[in-house]
Length: 331
Image 1 (cartoon, rainbow, N blue to C red):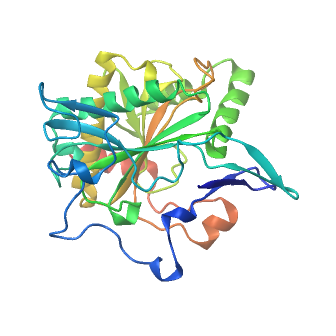
Image 2: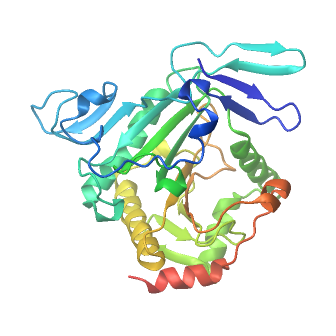
């Protein structure tokens, strides 16, 4: 069973997941699937994955059989497991707890190597609805405090399989990175009685230097203090702290802007590896006036090295103004 251990200095939790079976000789190897290898995510290979928990499929087709266009399954090698209770215990001065949680894979398309920007709008919209449906289902489990949706594209970004997919991990606590973001937003709100993210949107739309693209419901921008070159945030223009409040017209607009951003990144940077992740409010803290859900997209163009790890500073060789300009000019 995985185990969660708390750093007593800064309060950060670490997952010790020894069941994933890494020995010293395993580290440093590329794990992305090879040409000719059987892909467990492709249609016809459904028996190679755990049984699906959600699938959008053709009428009349059977569970765990071909006929789907979006399919969600538990991760075969989860970092946290749903079978247990979040019991805390001590080991001397240290705190730990059972590695309870949920780890799921959203298989985005039956097509093995089709990029998200190449999918039909309806397919991408259904991926977004799958995110929402799984959050709505898992938030009923009182053991879970936070759900992170993320996508790793390419080996350098952490992907172990080529087949297009994203992931979901439900946690028994709120991650410290999210806590810091929410606390900073709360301090801003207490001082100004306004959401800092709403103010960022107003400032950037007026300034226009760091705007990449916008539509009726969303804006994509390179943040003022971008950590990485060509980092992009996608934010809803209407204030909302939780992603699962998403409405039909917003899903359509989010589909358009997400596809456009991925296409611009690919065309500008030559199809780099990238990550995207969704920050939304904790499951038990809904409708926050001071917080604003958003999607962070980060191409993997530089490496985090000793200075960054030692200080928490990031060195970004491309200003967000230049990055936004390049991205705007690319169709």
